[in-house]
Amino acid sequence: MTAIVNPTGPAPLGPPPVPRAPVEATGPTAAGPVGPVLPLPGPADAALVPVTRDGRAVGAFVLADGRVRYRALPAPDRVLATAAGVTVVALVTAGVAVVARRRPPAIGTVTMGPGGWVSLRGARVPALRPATPRPWWARLLGAQRLVVRR
Image 1 (tube, rainbow, N blue to C red):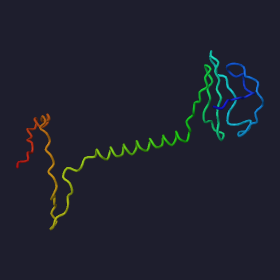
Image 2: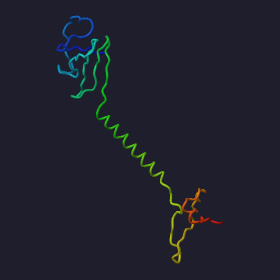
Image 3: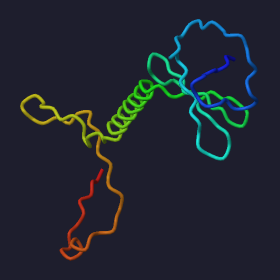
Image 4: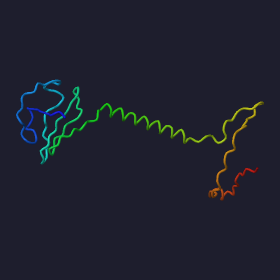
């Protein structure tokens, strides 16, 4: 693990640092990918050190209770791509569900037969409705049901 040393921030947590010989910086510049140490409010000594890459925040080191933990931040472009993908999948699923629930026509295709007569050849007979109590107006008028006799 790489040690984080930032002379411009507040005093580091834990025991005082041991004086060491200066180390030549290699790689990132003084501004570098690691930001200043930011003290966190609260009763315990805690600090936050942001980490950036190409000018964007990618995570942070959290210094608390004598431990150092790295917390990664989600990339905004990945969050947006995931949300768009989930939305597309949800819309396609809803469209398939709507199409699947559509009922087929009761008698099928009606075509014109030879001589101009209507042909229902190959069409299935629609199912009869289940016996239900007659409505009040049918009883009042004495209406009779149409029954298919075979």
